[in-house]
Amino acid sequence: MTHMTDPTPDTSEPSAANPPRIKSFVRRTGRVTTGQAKALESVGPRVLLPYQSDTIDLIATNPMNPVTNGQNDSKFERIVFEIGFGMGEATAHIAALMPQTLFLGCEVHDPGVGALLKRIEENNLHNLRICAHDAFEVLTHMIAPASLDGVHIFFPDPWHKKRHNKRRLIQAPFVELLASRLKAGGYLHCATDWQPYAEQILAVLQADATLKNRSTRAGGYSDKPDYRPLTKFENRGIKLGHGVWDVVFERV
Image 1 (cartoon, rainbow, N blue to C red):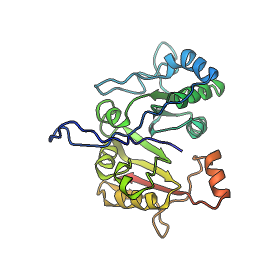
Image 2: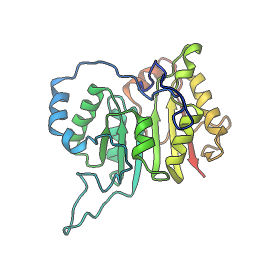
Image 3: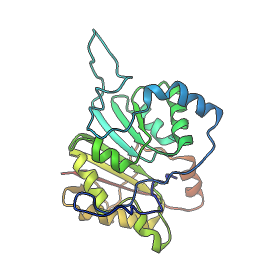
């Protein structure tokens, strides 16, 4: 499960330009394995994207982009942004299925970053970049409006206790930011195994006038898209009788 919500609210002085917000991550300690450390050293320089305060052209700045005839003739047709990829299992799987899509993943958990870098090397993936930084700041400063074809948020921390619900990532102000970065027709795909959070996600997305639900099912939830794999964690939950809810909306 992805954990991308900070238990401590931003306590800086609020203003119109700097409203109070919840950070999109919590920095968790964890042991980096030898293999992950090697991947951080060998693959990291080609894949890790340093945070900066200016917007960037993700395709033009991708060092793994193929170069032909002396020109940077990109094979990438779409850009998808992922928030909190955990150990990168689903991310690597989807990237392999969609070689013409460039994926930018935000994750601040070092073992997770190292694990995805290791998968990139093992599977010879050329369409992934990683920014180990707060997704809110990356979206706000580095990602231009109407530049993304998709956003993936799989199994964000549900903050089960009612008094902690305010710490959840999917809330109206953050969804407004996400929607502003999507192209017309671009999609936002969220998945969760906690029904109360699924209900909140659906309600928040339905309330945003710039988004429309792609699902035609009663209840508003989507069938699991073919590209999203069942992770070991998810399979274990399904065997125990737990549900999983996918919510897919698009920018109008």
